[in-house]
Amino acid sequence: MRKLLSLLVIPLILGLLIAGCAPVTPQIIEKEVIKQVPVEKAVVVEKEVPVEIEKVVKETVVVEKVVEKVVEKPVEKIVEKVAQVMAVKIGELYPFTGPLSEFGEPEHRSALLAAKHLKEAGYAIATVFGDTETSAIPAVEAARRLVELEGVDVLIGAAASGVTIPIAESVSIPSQVPQISFASTSPLITHLPADDDKDFLFRTCPSDALQGVVLGRMLYDEGLRKVSVMYVNNPYGQGLNDVFKKTFEELGGTVLASVPHDEEPAASYTAELKKATEGGPEVLVCISYPGHATVYMKEAIEGGFITEFRFVDGTKSETDIPNAVGAETIEGMCGTAPGAAETESLRIYNETYKAEYGEVPPLPFMTNTYDAVIVAALAAYEAQMAGEELTPIAVRDHLRSVAGPPGEKVFAGPEGMKRALELLQEGKDIDYVGAAGEVDFDENGDVVTPIEVWCYEGGKPVTQRLETP
Image: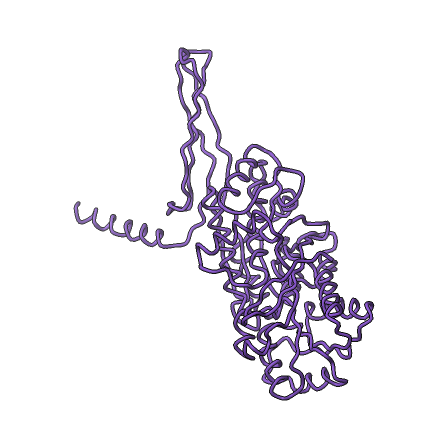
């Protein structure tokens, strides 16, 4: 008998150990709790058992809410049901490799910070992520894995517009999973034909219909009148180049040449540089990514093509470009990028990021990434508090209500999230003020945030001012 028990117990223990090592998505299920109360009890007491989801090692967390009430009979069964609250599952896509790789890890850290703040406020989310490689084909495959295999409720990403659009067209829109980009600024996204009347594509960064205007004004106000452009041949580069060119020429300037280059980084851009510098432009506007600009800027300087440059969000680089061409070479040269409004949320974001990871790198779209994760989680939570089943469509349908007016303004950070959850539990409206600014999605899923003018100082991009077109 003892030997038989051993044979039964050992596999059971091994099974439990294996199950304990597997990744899980904790959830809270509905459970009836019965409390018998004598009639002479004269007070009403409610007691809730707190749940710390991070300590759970099984798939299910049972929350018992015991309610004691006065009853008319000496003994009566009182049944209280606890609402079902499951952890939203968020899929995230970042450019850990490819020409935008300098931005991937800081963006991911911003998302981790958002998840940490939600967890500390009492709502733990489940996250899975993938590498877009800053390229459409691997990005679509990564998104497909997150949607079809991981079963995410919402997609956060991607960074490059030329990656976000194929994901939307091939994965998120056909699968009816909302997608929130934190860095895709192409004007084409505003009226993407595949998303007409479907409403699955959002972004927490502004369209380049705004940045292109500020860029054109910045160059003209500098006194520049003849410029050329090199741009990455994808929706981002094309869109920003078109708006910049139109703005600059309407002001009275001349764009001598707008020269595209392939999205895949090349070993040399000599042919493109020859076309761009014909006619002697005063500056070369670099509408590319660090993986491209590091090569052609170095070639331009060493080959005597041109030595004066202007930049955009894609070439706002903390390390790659300064290291490639030398900090002194680009000292005082300026650019534009989506900026962050001076809000309480931005202050909290900067303080908590610094405490968690060290200094905040002067890179674009980090605050926009934080905001994307926050609004996705709050939308899911509001849907659940309204008694709805947690589905991708439910998340989509609540994005605008948690991110814009009406409602009490709530801010970033653990305390801000705690207040947001309390209000949603009470069935009240909230208006999340983002770390990048207001996140008021319009009918196209777009937002308006300030555009910053920044310049290289000591090899680092430093914000000079914020502008609203």
